[in-house]
Amino acid sequence: MKTIIEPFRIKSVEPIHMTTREERREKLKAANYNLFALPSEDVIIDLLTDSGTGAMSSEQWAGIMRGDESYAGSPSFLRFEAAVKHLMPFEHVIPTHQGRAAEAILFSLLGGTGKNIPSNTHFDTTRGNIEAGGARAHDLVIEEGKDPTCLHPFKGNMNLQKLEEFLVEHGDSVPCVMITITNNAGGGQPVSLENIQAVSKIAALHGKPFIIDGCRFAENAFFIKQREDGQAERAIEDIVRDCFSCADGMTMSAKKDGFANIGGWLALNDPDMAELARAKLIQTEGFPTYGGLAGRDLEAIAQGLKEIVDDDYLRYRIRTNEYIIERLDQMGIPVVKPAGGHAVFIDARAWLKHIPPMEYPGQAVAAALYEIGGIRSCEIGTVMFGRQPDGSEVPAAMDLVRLAIPRRTYTQSHADYIVEAFEEVLSIKDSLTGYRIVKEPKLMRHFTCHFEPLK
Ligand code: F0G
Image 1 (cartoon, rainbow, N blue to C red):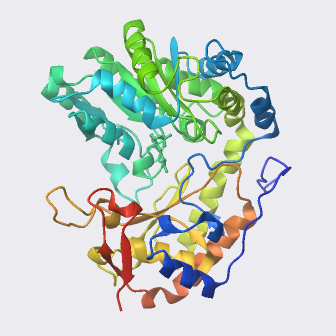
Image 2: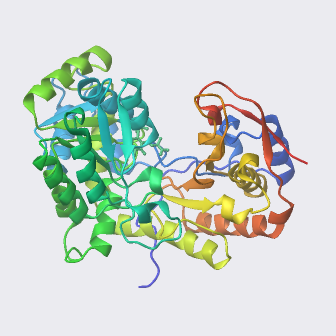
Image 3: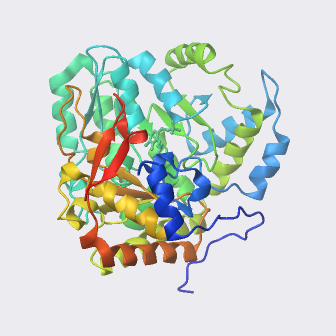
């Protein structure tokens, strides 16, 4: 069959509150044109993030009931630990309440003033946790990964030559080598198994632990199966195991490819590091058999990890993004290509050429998409990155808009609706105006700043 269907039936539904364009215009104004300020009930399709927003299966809900809430030695922890080790053969698995908590613990051990930590591209929270401890985060993704139109199959790959040079230059100040799969900050682009294994070798040669940020490991494995020589006939589980068996540790947000609404973990092979990490965990998150989670959350993750590596699910998942990107591309809307694993990225700067970066073309697209279709997306551009520590403002490297697709939550007709909303935006795009920021906090302004449309 040519039609790729949602490989699930729907047992429980959440109604979507439909609004009119007129109502949304008012709501947008009341939110000072900042989509983060909208109550989610006023959103028809919420594509702000794919993190923690997925739908759980009936088996996961059954696990929620099975959850054992004992403080120590809960069987829910043992099921969680076994499910992680089945895919990622690390010696020590330390649960945390979400990904950034695992990062905070890791960098409390490895970071610190004067340290330098390379990755393909660090995600914001990873960078935040590294920099909070006084270390520096460095992004060494391949050049193709920075070009929105380049059709390289593994745009998340690490630049191996740069990594070698980096390790020679920074020597003892490098506590570990990281890689993020898929590369979220670079458009959800995958990293090849060959590249992961090469990074592992280089790290080992220099005596550095190799740590994977594995948030979207299953999507990454599916891309490896589709695109890498010799991988097409292999099981996703086996590809996943290969990716992690060459690493010394991982950080994980189970809110992504754990199919859970909350949760994460830090996994390590080194027993001394694991002991220090557990001590820190007890101080900040909880006892090592629950780490900031309820027993029921551990059950949801254990079951989620069994479901996420399903070929049929991953085929449908990746196809949804590809479908939307193909349709937008046909309309001439500039998108980041090829489609990433969890999101569709629009190049707003290239699309709305009449709006200069300092008038926030990404914000203009995101606001129009909400007004026209009730779709909530996220500007990833000058609003997010433009304000500098010295108070000045400069255009970000790109002005993108991210439409992150929650897992198993929306259907093909929602995808068609998104495409139709873009058709509408396209028809009025020359009349869209830029924005100015009239109120902003000192840090991370995109979450709370107030905008006004320019006339
Ligand atoms: N690493 C990556 C690659 C991520 O995408 C995220 C979260 C984290 C770490 C942190 O995990 O949220 O559980 O603390 N990304 C979300 C997003 C927030 O919208 O992309 P967390």
